[in-house]
Image 1 (cartoon, one colour):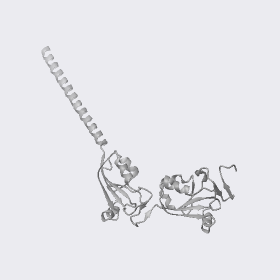
Image 2: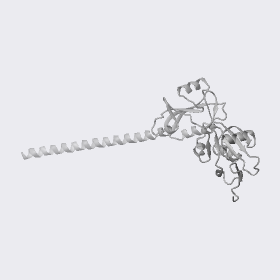
Image 3: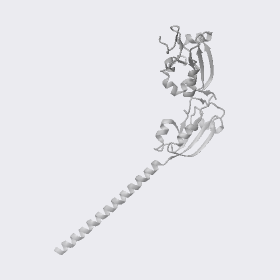
Image 4: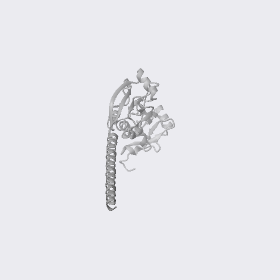
Length: 271
């Protein structure tokens, strides 16, 4: 009986040990499988998104904003660009793409492929609009072409309002240079008007201008979002959409004519 018990215990012990070994082996295999799966997922998540770019261009629009910087930005954001083609917006293919993806501004970039991949999706969510199976980047710059009309939008008319009676007053071209050099404003046309002229008097009255020289910008300036974001601190937006520069102190120590008091203001001289 003792011998039988010993044999039974021995068999049970071996069976238990075998079970433990099998369970341990299974756990190890499962752990190895999980590790390989996690490694494969991490590798896949880090892999650049494979995408294709179609650039819709208006080759006859010399002032339209260029796409090169946008394309370079796309290349730099975890992407593997498999193909990049350029299509004229007014070609048959271009017209089909404009209709298919509801494009309202040219130039535009249509992005297809792995646009929902986790490592690129947040970037596209901030910069593009999802249309069907593609992301469309159409807010490229202030100057663009409307494909429906062929009109070029975003170029600004500039009026320099001067005062010939103030020979020491600052030159409003100074503001023009800030607009074009610092904010990239493209001008459609510009004109200089003296406040003593009939047109000048009409502008002073229409916009209740109290300090000259100054500048008046056409409503198209609202395409320049960086400039518009700071405009409240330097000027006004009029009911007809015009933008009038008013805050002379933003230009530093400049001489100007205060029309309200009739005085020539020179900040370098104690008033």
